[in-house]
Length: 157
Image 1 (spheres, helix red, strand yellow):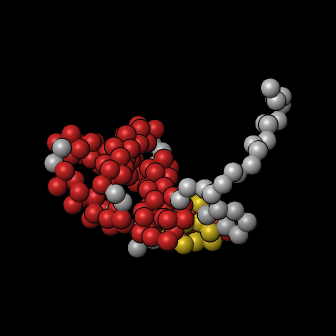
Image 2 (spheres, helix red, strand yellow; image 1 turned 45 degrees about the vertical axis):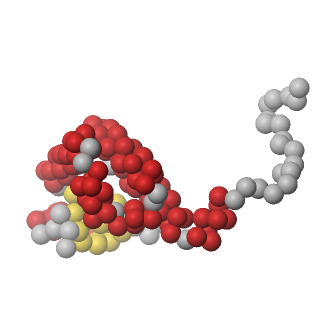
């Protein structure tokens, strides 16, 4: 297992023993009752993870520069099976955004932008995979939608 679930209170009551558990797992997931869970990871593990992310971003950028669309398409389907539901133009757009975002995120040592981008594209794939939902979300509105209110602090002309 890559991580172990541990109550946050265990870290508070037995910090040394809890930290020693990192000898057997990559990280500890510290469960909290009233807030989001936390992760406890060794600094060397964090540095290794950052190195892998940086390498992966550079490798992906290099693959895209080769313009071997068949290889890229296959690699993408293996990594993100849901991408099969995206139109071809969207797959190309996603690849470009993924490379740029991964390079920037690696430089900042912050993976959150990559996770957000992947979640957004996955939601797009979910919409394309459901014809009824796609039709509902892409249809033109019917009739006049009414007056648009003037934003606060501005006056009507």
